[in-house]
Amino acid sequence: MSELVDIVDSLENKISKLLHKVELLNQAKGRLEDELIQIRQDHEATKNSVKEWEEKYESLKLANSMLGSENNKTEAKLKINTLIRELDHCISQLAE
Image 1 (cartoon, helix red, strand yellow):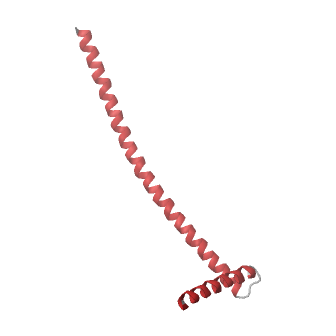
Image 2 (tube, rainbow, N blue to C red; image 1 turned 90 degrees about the vertical axis):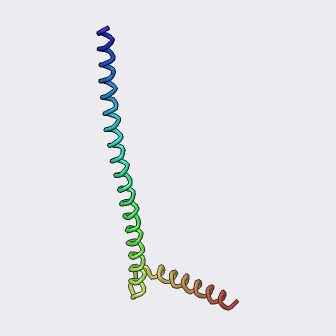
Image 3 (cartoon, one colour; image 1 turned 60 degrees about the vertical axis):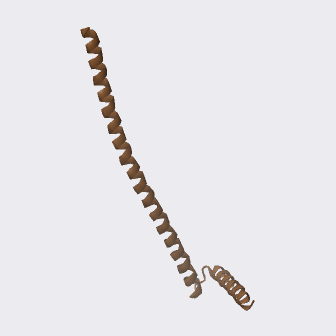
């Protein structure tokens, strides 16, 4: 009979340890999920920042070519032609 009590006590002890480990793992999981959310937000902010800097770079490149720089002159001309076509299209839509 005492062997049965020892076995039950041993099982209760092991179950208690397992439940404690489960709780610790759940807490670690929660921290990792919070960290993942923060990392995703940081990543999105970084992507937006990179996009803004790329747009600024393109604007500066275009402005530089319009100021008489030999670099990217054809690109500036193409951009101007595109803007003119867009303006013509808008004017034709207003005329209708």
